[in-house]
Amino acid sequence: MDVLSEELSQARARGAVFSILDRRAPWGLGFSGGRALTAHVLLRGAGLIEVPGIPALDLAAGDVVLVTAGTPYTLVSAPGVPVEPIGEARMRGSDEPAVHDARILCGAYRMEGGLSEAFLATLPRVVVLRSGELEPAHRVLVEVMATEADSGEDGRQSILDRILDLILVYSLRTWWGRPDSQCPGWYRGLADPLLAPALRAIHRDPGAAHTVDALAGIVGLSRAAFAARFRTMVGEPPGRYLTVLRMRRAADALTRGEASLATIAAGVGYANEYAFSTAFRRIYGVSPGRWRRRRVTEAD
Image (cartoon, rainbow, N blue to C red; front, side, top):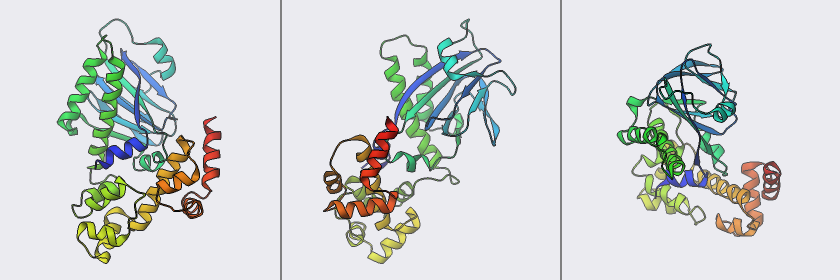
């Protein structure tokens, strides 16, 4: 099972290209910082990303930047240049004439599922991936994106959206591969050939009756050895990990659908609503019904 793809699917990460802008220097773009996750790709030229509290970071052509929600920030050609809000920049479009100093792509991801908060918590405010450290296929995607951005062909928007989705997957793999990065516990666990089969079994069907003994049997370890190895690699005991995963899946179901509590409870492995509600309250601090009402209110 491809756990990374499943996690992104559950979080409903979908790319939405919202600007491809050609600019002559000096140029500056301002962003509210309110989006859950934004990607910037400098398709041509050079610039800086300026985020309060973080030293300005130089950007070169082919670099990929991920920015999580927070304070407003800017992309600029040089320090101190005038900054145009991205909304106004999108309405104005690209600079004329056709020769420009920079081409900047900015895309937002809609991370609306119950897993999104835990997913985004593994990322710092700003991730900069230099062109030279990208996987070969990742660099090719950036080049294809630059080519497609110049295309006037039908389907251009859909192609760019899909490429942006792929760039997120490659970016996460590159970032989480760094020794100093904070990657999810399941990602570390999947790198362990002894733990990987058990983790895939859990994610394939969180509602199944996964006991520690059964999971240990899958990987051929004793109960004690499996539990100790799991806690060291993943960061929490297997029982706790399973419960949290079940509750995140349940929270996602509560947010995006009208299924009854009994149906959701059964889907994540609980025989009755009472046991499910107790587990849910332990993780989220409120009952499933209140969680659903709160999310519906927030959506309105």
